Image (cartoon, rainbow, N blue to C red; front, side, top):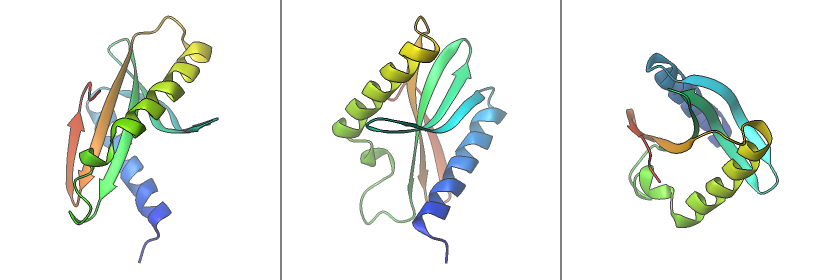
Length: 112
């Protein structure tokens, strides 16, 4: 049985491959900053895209997209602002979510 961390890494790997196949360029993974972590930082059509990967094996605790609640969105916005200020201060940015519900993968572009 895979640990929670192993399942998380596998989900992020699957999301990265999915995004790459759709023309995204993965720039960084698991970017740790004071206050949290950004799962994937990508570039797509000249836009810096911050991607949250959420996985739910069952619907017991709701869907994967539901787990990206207002608190999580606010935290990701703060982290992205810090990252962009250092790496690409003039970049256009976007937030996408890759939701994995069981075997179903969904991309939510411009999710928030």
